[in-house]
Image (cartoon, rainbow, N blue to C red; front, side):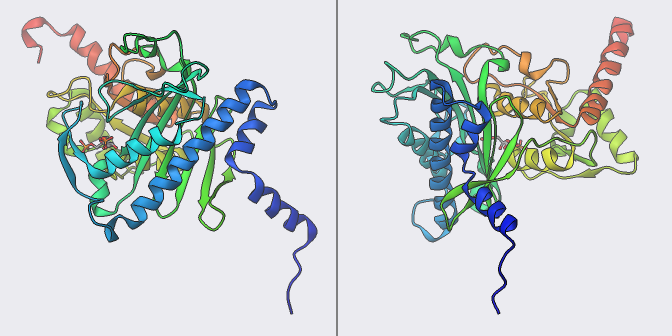
Length: 355
Ligand code: FBP
């Protein structure tokens, strides 16, 4: 005999299934203002990009020419994956004829890409990392896309995008898409952090969690310990501390988005310190670390370079890099305390003894 769901459960499931991303953004703005409509429409296009990339990733192993390297090297000096190129083009394509985004800046492009037909009215710039965790693509491990929306300031006629060289509090919205066992989209417009799961049967991102708050502390520390000898002594001391103390466990997936998502939900800290080779770190500020810092502060967490609040960092160039320490308040402050101690001891040490 068929069970009839009680009315309220039925209504709840229906309400939830109908809380799509674009509807949720309008609810967040509590208005149908031009800005609310624009951001809702932009998020909808980002959702489409996520669906296209998710579909490609799920089939890539069955397709010719979807995996592997292109043979090219990008502006970062990194070998480019075919999936990087596909995903980068997807983000550009979904915004064509939208009248929304005039300029797109990406990890895969030295200079921003302009959509001329959008520029007269398009008031926004999209900054994005089309495939974060590229080293995971060919081995079917989790990867992500990271995005950030900023106001278009000025005409940027020389294409140098100087108006983008501003601190992270200028972001209007930020988020990421995690391509894992299910495809998850997490975003914020500065009014809390909310997550959606792609329901393939509906082809819609459906709301699953609102106003996510990161725990004050978590057991996870996430870092590539293979760089240990390239770090400053302060980070080495922190890692020796967590090795010697109960209650800590190491998790590192090779994809920032995946590691960040774990820490957002379970607490802990992710670190990518500067190294002797790259004192400024590996991760890019405008489309990797600043968007995640925007989210973590909205979720009650903390993000820093180790010595400066990450959202206050002003980049010198479009592809500027920063060291990153991000996660639960207590855990980020613990890492920072090791850096403070070390810098104080260095300052007090006679010059002849300095390392
Ligand atoms: P990509 O955007 O090019 O993938 O680079 C970023 C990244 O892959 C992060 O996702 C990840 O946390 C980090 O680099 C891994 O770097 P490493 O291999 O040096 O640990």
